[in-house]
Image (cartoon, rainbow over all chains, first blue to last red; front, side):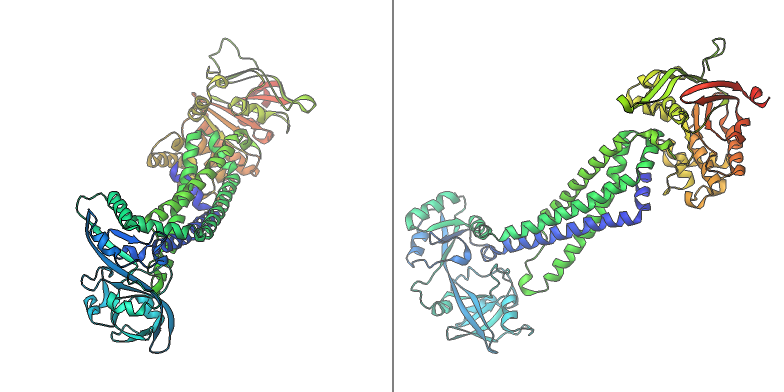
Length: 378
Length: 240
């Protein structure tokens, strides 16, 4: 009976393809928007995740996210180092300043001054060059997005210079820094290189990065740091979540939720309506099946198989299309972080499956109401 | 059309069947106290003008409609008293149908259409299609088993419908105006096949028709008018 059901479905090609297209477009729309939302929310924690060595982040108490960091007094570093349970701690300076390239391109940039000796604060990989080369004075790493902003359409070439606050920094590497939420270039230098760029601020660190001793309780250590220093101490995971929550509270996700909702409603409306029409137009055939002894569970199985095929094919096409667009997006330096999380792919397909199942149940109710004797009418 | 107690029990027995639709002033009584029997091994024709209640009566006999009052027994079983699921299973096993408009599924081949009752009963697809092909072969459609209904003539489509009615070897075949949509030659040919293949000592066949060109195929005729059976006669009496 399953094969018969699928044959019946495929025979009405117009409706079959209309339903697949509706599911595919709906899945595409939802996955695309959910992927962008998920990716940009992930980007709010990019620079925190880029320092996997640091399990602890210490900052000014009113800091709500990485991009909103405020200067921390220099003496706090020693207090953090002296806290029980802290294995090591190093300073990180974040400077927001204008960067200008030799060809005159100007952009606001984020300069991260990492500890001179340990270089903790650098991203784990460089695409080109040597990360350790930033130990040389007035040198830096720049991320691919920043390079493409300052040197548009130029291939990666080391040795180019950028000017920040009257200081020329020589690019010694292209870092694999994760794309930031703000879209500004991410420039890594040593803190000694970065401090002169930090005009107008008397303090030379923005964060204190640290790591717990093995076996230390993170919550207790954070609490101890906060009581000792008066600063805010968060684990890397907590700080990432704080940053995401801060941006989430700004209303950005709402716009995406609306489009995702529209995708679901459009998909549900078209798929459900077309499926109900398909069943309506096949009422005579379904009546015949009831007459020849097809039971209600068999009929339900047939309808669910038909809907299952539509959802499976539509979801595959929709996911394929969404994957294609995100893959194409990733060729742009600032969109390298765009991807479709597995849970988004599964959830969107599942949402469409639920909606279609609801349409099947509605259709089944109509089928149950069919009067088998109507098949005798000419 | 009372049954003679001296004879073996009939395949179909209807006692004082009433069927009405609607309520109050809109109430229409379609069947008015029908007594009817159909015997094994022959064709019983239900004849009469359009609107006299023939189709309603066979719908009640098949268990597709419930009588307002009265009793219908098929092979000694009062089908209306069976639970809904058992009624469907009873119908699946014991009844075959031929319709005026064939009612073939347009997306399925002739063999698949003929195999539907077997597939519904859970017979494996290959076995069901093999059996359906054999029946189609007997009905002269052995070379058209893979053809879709739209490329078959009306007579051929009705033969596929006949194959679907016989493929599961039911004990009762109900035919509703099987020749009404066919020209005289095709209609005659279908009735000949029906009488050759459907009539069987262990099977009863009820044919609803108002086409008097095919009445000579009947073993018995029951005349209906205005919801009642007005007369019954044997083939010999009709021919005379």
